[in-house]
Length: 263
Length: 264
Image (cartoon, rainbow over all chains, first blue to last red; front, side, top):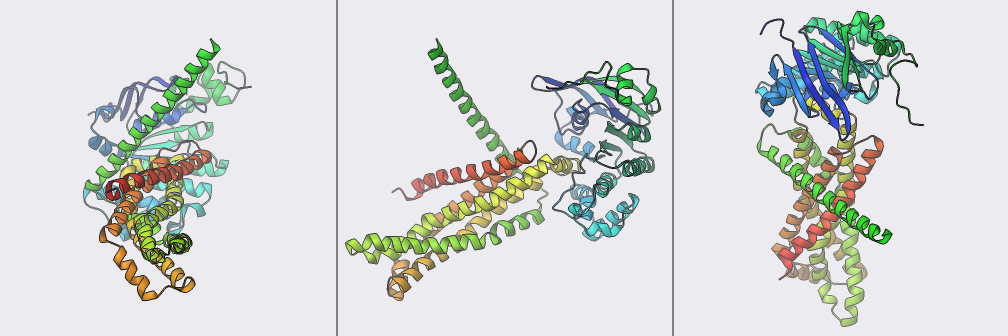
């Protein structure tokens, strides 16, 4: 494998729910060590794309290669091994509310250790969780709390800590700043950039927060009606030259994108 | 013509309902088989198993105990009212012990646990589903079925017979107390009649029924929670469906098991 091989390579990805086509022949390359931001309106299929890559939703057609291996054609065991290299920050955190914060952060470590027969002790896992919590700007004492005792921003940080605890090769971020105030959003974006750089991971973030997209992304793409209608550097998001992207990024009501409103 | 259409609509509705029933039965069977297959494929999540065992077995004890105690007393009272007309009061001890061990113990404990535990399981797993926690498990190298469902199924299958054993004892005790204190039965005679009437198979089949009920209750709770969709409303519907389905399946399987073991 050379450095020119994309870390993630998607070709002809299709997914429909009944008559509704959500992904309609997606082609996407994400190079190693880069951060790709995918923007698009609500319901445009951004989350479905991430879930297809993770195998949470079966794709109808197409290929998804990670390090040159088509994960859709892999047997379950080998596919699980590939998924193990991916960390995911969910939109609402998706923290396990029956577990404490440190157990959430260490969950992947303990699970991976169990799979490979070298499970760390709970004391070791707790110490590791404390260190990872510090990396995302939280005091290790937070580890003893329950997720329900945390603010939205803290929950996002714990979600981020859980995603990076296993030092994954690939990180996915699903709407990382949704529901946060602008300052906390910027803090989370900064943490994401730091974590991705430190780990050297390849990242895909989906968002409709333009400020966040420009802070996180090296590259950007826009998803509209199941197709990627534009790809380019994240710095050119606000002046892409594509009328659809311009309308979306500037939040204009008038333009080629017509919102389907039910009256 | 409208009459023909109405008939066709009715037949179509019946067909849809039948197809839905078959589809659900198939999905439920596959779900149960998948969950059971994880029993023999490591890892097994002992912490979840013991947590569920305590939740089902220990925390259901008060409600099951009270239900059994009062039910035993009620059977004694009702039997006395009826049997006294035929001077057959001596059969009351046997009636109480057989009714409790064969039927009331397993069925009442099962219904109580279905309401308490089945609903809680469906709500917990359903909430995990709609808040992406189940997807998060997958991304963290953990099979959700293995982690959430298999330990609960095993815990339910083991815990309910234990509860029913307690229910059996307390149900008989309830009948004994009412008979001795209120109906002036001789305590030694009542105890002797109880032991004469009850056979080992009465208790063991009751416990076997309880194991089946425990499996069905937890299966329904897990299945409806796991497959719930939407937000709070979806979780609410899943909870209701879990309790209703568990109760119906419990009573239907009770009939079948009774027919198999006691019909001759």
